[in-house]
Amino acid sequence: MAQAPAKVGEVSQLIFFMKNCSSGKRISANILLSFTLNKKSTPAHIKVLESACKPCETEAIRLLKEGPHWVGKPGAKGKVRIEF
Image 1 (cartoon, helix red, strand yellow):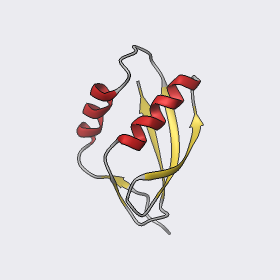
Image 2 (cartoon, helix red, strand yellow):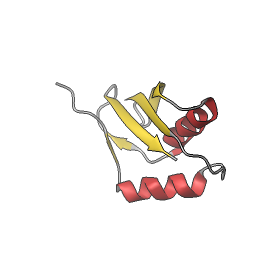
Image 3 (spheres, one colour):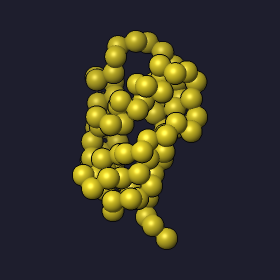
């Protein structure tokens, strides 16, 4: 069984990034994304599994793409929930 990818660094680093690099709009949303790790240990083939609104999806995808690298083998599949 393949091991799910894990974030490099602490969760607090990702939370800091999300709070300081978001678009600045004050909204409340809960987005679930799935992805596959590429050879550079960054998320690729990102899909929205749960969403409240289209702008929230766009921002969650942007944060996932611009966030920290992940640990795992290329092709590993993962899920992440981003809350605003």
